[in-house]
Image 1: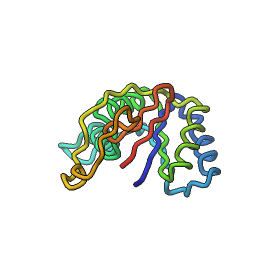
Image 2: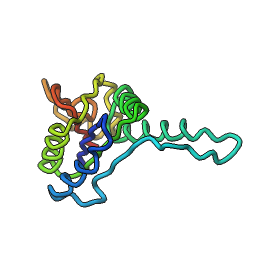
Image 3: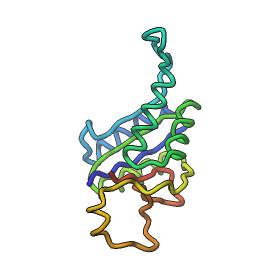
Image 4: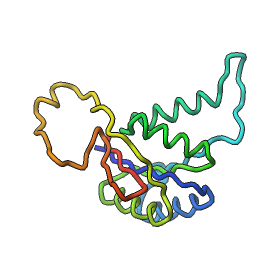
Length: 153
């Protein structure tokens, strides 16, 4: 099951160094991504709303990997304020190391609500053992004091 860590950085100037350090942990380049809000949005037609399209695509992508709607909107707001996202996907050990690295380099804490439970096929639910006091909530692994957030999808 893929696991992704997402870090929001208020200072996009530090992102290149964070990415180099994450790649040095053994992540393939195609598993480490960065995202900033475009400086300009190209209008492609009369009914073109490029900024809105960018933001809708961003929120959908983050929700697809397990972010709550509120969490995805918080990331969007961070980008609107000039921040940058770093995303790294990999094994548990690598993702944990990448999260530690992001947090040491200033990843911003995102307040998230628990959100609705993801819609899983009923065949999976029937075989699942309920977990009490689990750190996994609706596809997210909550870490109360850290800036980077884990998503299992």
